[in-house]
Image 1 (cartoon, helix red, strand yellow):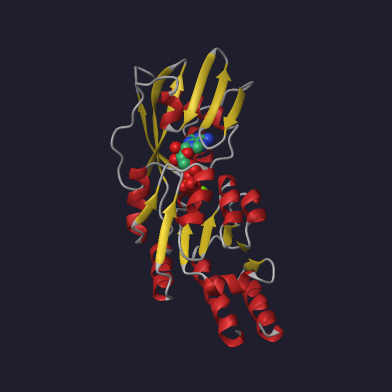
Image 2 (cartoon, rainbow, N blue to C red; image 1 turned 90 degrees about the vertical axis):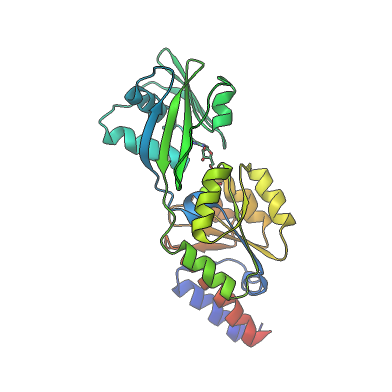
Length: 285
Ligand code: ADP
Ligand code: MG
């Protein structure tokens, strides 16, 4: 690109609160034809609220929530923050002296007093109690499983709403000629499909581990932009042609691995970043 156009594109993006790293990124944005979005914290707000506690096997709802929240203090996952806020809101005091470790992308395993607690993905809890299961979820709801002392203790149902301008952003991208829009998420298929549908995305890849996301972006065609926020998204942001991090409330790891960091908590900036790339290279290529 002519240096003048290039500098113009860089300063325009900076003024829009979109940090573009590296000289080649604007050109890659201009050439992008596929955009893949992470779900939690990217298409959704990532500020989940507790909708319901569904205790199982005779456990008490507040006790399930208190133990889960006590364990979640050791997780940086956005759902963990939602569980902790809900417990505090109900005036439940979190246990002290918890011995716990986060099992990345699965949940937390904790020793709380005399109790052994697991909280996170259904599969993670089924490892200790194969009978654990989720009932049907309403659209826009996601479920976290809890086990206490080797038994399924219940489900925490959380609501994490679609961002207000997510569907509009997907529409703008399509109008701008992005022929291929997809969702890549670690969450379960049903939750993923319902949120994707509301965003106007019909291609959904669910129940993914971070390495699955990396494999998928290399398979998606052509020229892929990946948008994500979580610690788990750092590898896929690095692997995509252009990685865009939702920087405002996202993880530091995601921002560090990305080529573009959106400073405001606004998914609409994704379309703006592509537009700036194109405007810059339309004049200059
Ligand atoms: P996404 O890829 O959409 O951002 P994640 O991979 O971050 O989603 O999370 C997917 C699922 O992982 C959640 O829906 C939840 O079931 C589970 N999970 C992982 N860690 C935790 C945790 N600490 N607490 C609760 N659930 C967790
Ligand atoms: Mg996420």
